Amino acid sequence: MLAKRIIPCLDVTAGRVVKGTNFVGLRDAGDPIEIARRYNEQGADEVTFLDITASSDQRDIILHIIEACAEQVFIPLTVGGGVRKVEDVRRLLNAGADKVSMNTAAVQNPDLIFDASSKVGSQCIVVAIDAKQVAPGQWHVFTHGGRNDTGMDAIEWAKKIDALGAGEILLTSMDRDGTKNGFDLALTRAVSDAVKIPVIASGGVGNLQHLADGVTEGRADAVLAASIFHFGEYTVRQAKEYMASRGIEVRL
Amino acid sequence: MTVAGQTIAVIDYGMGNLRSVSKALEHVAGGKQVIVTADPAVVAAAERVVFPGQGAMPDCMRELDARGLRTAVLAAAKDKPFLGICVGEQMLFEHSDEGNVPALGVFGGNVKRFPDEKMHLPTGERLKVPHMGWNEVRQKPHALWSGIADGSRFYFVHSYFVEPADPALVTGTCEYGVPFTCAVGRDNIFAVQFHPEKSARDGLQLLKNFVEWQP
Image 1 (cartoon, rainbow over the protein chains, first blue to last red):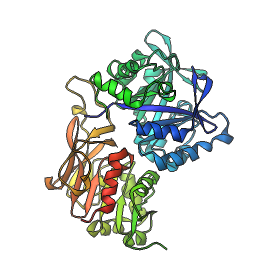
Image 2: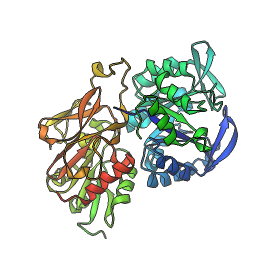
Image 3: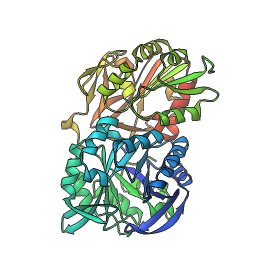
Image 4: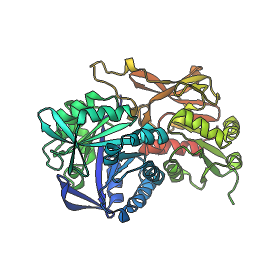
């Protein structure tokens, strides 16, 4: 049976991994290559790098990190942050990324999803949704690192992403991100049930139970977490053993 | 100058990133040189050949022909140790439903999409397509599985799979909604639907077995 995936996420800026709460208040978590290697050894199913660098002059640093990572870590590598055109996708893939995640640019220009997936294949294209609850059972899509409410319904946007040819959705609850209160399970389930492509749940993991809930109640195909792994609270291996004990198929 | 007979050619027909494949091969290649190449002469001189592929089948076939690589691939598939990966496996068959295109026809059989009506578990939960992630591979005896436990997980990402006309070609199977063939082999050719270069330890072992393979 296909295993549910556990994906450690590394927010990278100026060549370092950092982690904040609700998209602000960053603290240093270490060297990205070293951390990716450690997660690989612990049995991570993939690794995701999000380049949160604001200025474009530092943007190329991420390319060197990906190149170095691809030489040493032989599991899938997803990279996101600052992707605006198909050329950006190509540069990241050529550096060694297996998948590229886009967010704000896809909202502003949905054709980018179609163009990119037509040119490099759906399997390479991940669209990230930053969603925030605006009413019970209703979520809006936010952009620009969570500062801008687009007014778009997150479920409808997810369906459109699927129809435009994306290979996967990375779904982050902005209400939960960095809070350690667990995924927004209602949001995760609503999106996962609405689309035919895999959904990665993100935002809010504080313990191993949260990861399991994302799969069982949220029906996510993969779960993404950052701080519980970065600061040594749990290893990826412990997370997988816990999920297996809950009857979830994992790669051990 | 490269030493003929000691090189592993990774065929580059312009479809996507070959860095992962070449780096993973270098990791296990011992003294052999790994060359990513679009040059038919380099392919012809190589000791062994890796034929990767990603993206849509019609684009892959078109780019292969546009670069004049079809003859070199077919020649290599005749007598060199030859490893097809993902769409590189699918292209060895006769025809793909993806874009309804003819392929290279090294093997009899076709490439099919996961059938929508079968994409659910007995519990009713929907199975997503693409089939993306780590799934268990059931082996049939072959030298390239050496040192890899039967049922080991490899990383897949695909929506189509091969249906060989000759069941004797099947060297590995997997299950996702339906049982499907995920590895084939005959004589000097081995080809897989999954990505050994992204499949951690077991994937590297398979690539090492290929590098050392004397079919």
